[in-house]
Amino acid sequence: MSFLDYAPAPESRAIVRLRPSYGLFLDGEFVDGHGTPFPTISPATEEHLAEVATADEHDVDLAVAAARRAYDEVWSKLSGSDRGKYLFRIARLVQERARELAVAESLNNGKPIKESRDLDIPLVAAWFFYYAGWADKLDYAGLGANPKALGVAGQIIPWNFPLLMLAWKIAPALAAGNTVVLKPAETTPLTALLFAEILQQADLPPGVVNIVTGAGATGQALVRHPGVDKIAFTGSTAVGREIARATAGTGKKLTLELGGKAANIVFDDAPIDQAIEGVVNGIFFNQGHVCCAGSRLLVQENVHDDVVERLKHRLSTLRLGDPLDKNTDIGAINSQEQLDRIRELTAAGEQEGATPWSPPCELPANGFWYAPTIFTGVQASSRIAREEIFGPVLSILTFRTPQEAIAKANNTPYGLSAGIWSDKGSRILAVADGLKAGVVWSNTFNRFDPASPFGGYKESGYGREGGKQGLSAYLAPSGGAQ
Ligand code: NAP
Ligand code: MG
Image (cartoon, rainbow, N blue to C red; front, side, top):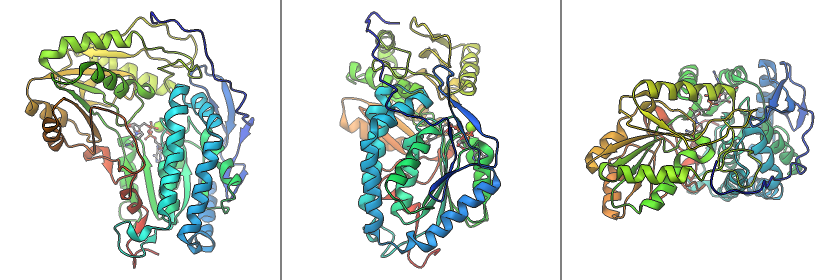
């Protein structure tokens, strides 16, 4: 698709030895599930990768019982520094197996290997190292002396960053002294199962982490299980609402990380070429399957034409194709279901009068693909300006004054993230102050660090992950629950 031609440079798959089938990870062992196993595929080719077990209610019950036993008999009796040693060990094993995990992630999710290799997996290790360091310092977490673990945490994660979301959930839970039952997304279970092997290698006591694969019904069973003390969920706002209803009045603690529709605001004094890189990263990173993606570009009216022209030029150099090729910028859409959703929303955008543009781009014949797309002439009321597309699609709107930029950026039911591009520090601070978003990046975008809390306002959910704030989701002040 571009004027720059490269020879294919595929990463070898030989480093990943997938088993033909995977069981559930219960009480330290892989066991069969009672539900019907399901195939997991590569979204780039639709190739069958492995069969994966389905956990039904009975299996979820076994997993929660194993987690409770491990909590009562082992994990709650260890000192913080001993828990930390296990977390450090897990972090080092993730680093040792980093190439294998990166290839498996790209195979099962469809994301480019340069992202899984350089971002996802290094951040997974960083998250475990960071929370390993907290395990013996919980008295300094801001919750008073000697805060207590909650008990058994049920954790449900989406498919867009399978192993990274697992790390965001498991690392703080274990550091704080909880045990875990985690459900990966139906379309991306593989790296969670490789991670279970890492837990065996690390000699983590059986039952401290249990992994129950399956679809929405498995998640539902976990949410409703009376033996779970806390639910941590990342996913769509619709499912988040359902979980909030199901846990209301049960005494279960709940944190929700939901969707977003972030504004990336470009002022006329911004270094435009850098801003273009940030806009491209903001929406085309991970095919736009990013809850904090900069999916609405708000550009100051007097530089609109220049920005759009440079953006088109830059998009023409992006390479779409084999996720395992080291030169690939844009990989596959994760599933047929997600592709259908992207198509439905972009068709609505056209009907509502916005103008789409994509670079010339050949899509592979098999698998799920969507060309990077920008929409100009987008009205604030249009569905593509309001709803989360969760794909490689950017909606471009304009503004004239900082006040108008703030008003338009906040004109959304979500409030997860935002970006500001400007040369003036005072303007950045003033605008950031007016934005209702959990994370505001300035002159950069999609930067993640385990020390930095992440989370939303409004329909983007509540609670924070990362940093010491992320510990409070798994701790009760002393004298609390347990
Ligand atoms: P989803 O359908 O809400 O699924 C998320 C997880 O919940 C999956 O494991 C899913 O299982 C499970 N699930 C589905 N129905 C359930 C139910 N009734 N009870 C309990 N669990 C249930 O979302 P998705 O399509 O996987 O992910 C995309 C969405 O997640 C986007 O809206 C995105 O914005 C959001 N997201 C937010 C963040 C954040 O940090 N705020 C991060 C990533 C993604 P199945 O896989 O079987 O459906
Ligand atoms: Mg789903």
